[in-house]
Amino acid sequence: MTHSARLTNTDGTWEIYVVTDSPYPWDWPTHKFGAAAAIPTLAQRDRALAALGYEVAPRAEWEWQELPSGYMDSVELLAALQVQPAGTGVAA
Image 1 (cartoon, rainbow, N blue to C red):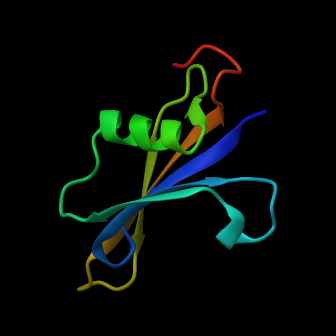
Image 2 (image 1 turned 135 degrees about the vertical axis):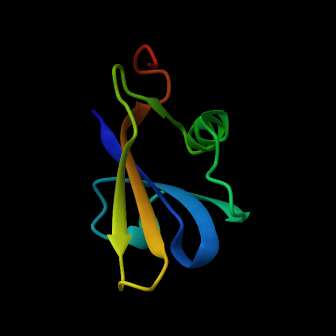
Image 3 (image 1 turned 30 degrees about the vertical axis):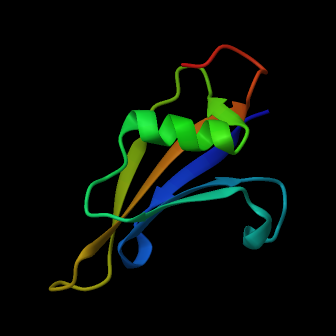
């Protein structure tokens, strides 16, 4: 079974979370990278997912989306990737 992992930069803090079957977002596994201007590297994201008990699903790739709040405001970035529980298959 795969889930969607999402990477966001809300309020200047990068975090990755896994959308599970729970209807409550506060129950979703989450890792905060802390305040940083740089987008976490692929290796950092993989380590965070592993710490949450997940791995990249086969053939999955990050898909990026911009979420503008206004013409002159900074843009919030959202990235999504399919993941699976660790140890259930071959990671991409």
